[in-house]
Amino acid sequence: MTPELLSWSLLLAGLLAALLRAATPILLAALGGLVSDLAGSVNVALEGLMLVAAFFGVIVSAHAGMWFPQLAPAWYPWLGCLAGVLAALALTGVLAVCHLEWGADLIVAGIAVNILAAGLTVFLLASLVGDKGSTAALNSPVLPSLHWPVTADRPWLNVLLNGADGRGHHVLLYVALLAAPLLALFLKYTRYGTWLRAVGENREAAFNAGIPVRQVQYAALLLSGVLAGLGGIYLSMGYLSLFQADMTAGRGFLALAAIFLGARSVAGTFCAAMLFGASTVLATQLGAQQIPTQLVYMVPPLVTLLALVAAGARRRAHKVRL
Image (cartoon, rainbow, N blue to C red):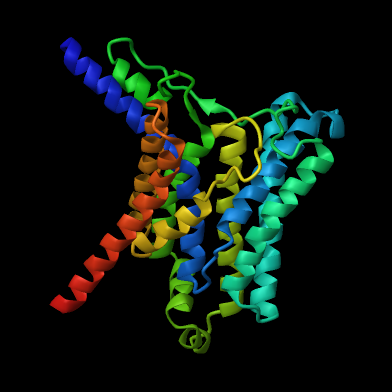
């Protein structure tokens, strides 16, 4: 391989690795939102669920040694991960009860959950850590990364599989990549996947066919909470090693946009999440070039708007042809 070709291959491998890392939290939340959306329950609380999971994951993992002295240190991050998922699951349960039992509007309730999560995490951060900005004062462990041994004659493959820093990719990145095909298989080939799609298409017809509609919607919302929680945990226990106030930075809303941009399909949602991950990488690269931060922050939402406009134009053109 010539030096120029090697240089380009390393650059592309590094960009792809950065893309996967940036897209992982969006992809996890988007897959969760897709499940609930296909069941007829749009979960707009993904942002808040990610934020709550990110916070409790760090807090519990940082204090696990004090609370559970008999536990080996290697288990601290996994305990934090479990706590973060349970926190997101509990908040999703509240949302599900408000909507399915008490008849609350799901959109309004989801917005309320987002506001609650933003305020609650800052309040608890100040109360437990004494800092309204971050948990930098805490020594919080992170979930492990997987490192793949690669021969020295393929440096581009090493960069792709282990990242430009050589530390490997976070375990939740592989969870996200596996979740997409597993979800596609679940929806297409299992009875419960068929039930879920049937409930979303026509709730009354599904009920008349003997499908437990309410249980399906509960399960779909709770699963969306688990996946969104994993996305939040990735941010605070992988992408970073701390919690920051409002650290989700709109990724939950990007996940919602990915669902609709991807035409409510697993493959489309995956591609849309990768697109938004690419916009995040682009914003990072622009920030390194001393471009004004105001312009850098505009990149992900601008890409989102352009992508949604393009998707809408494509659907209108398809309807005209029909």
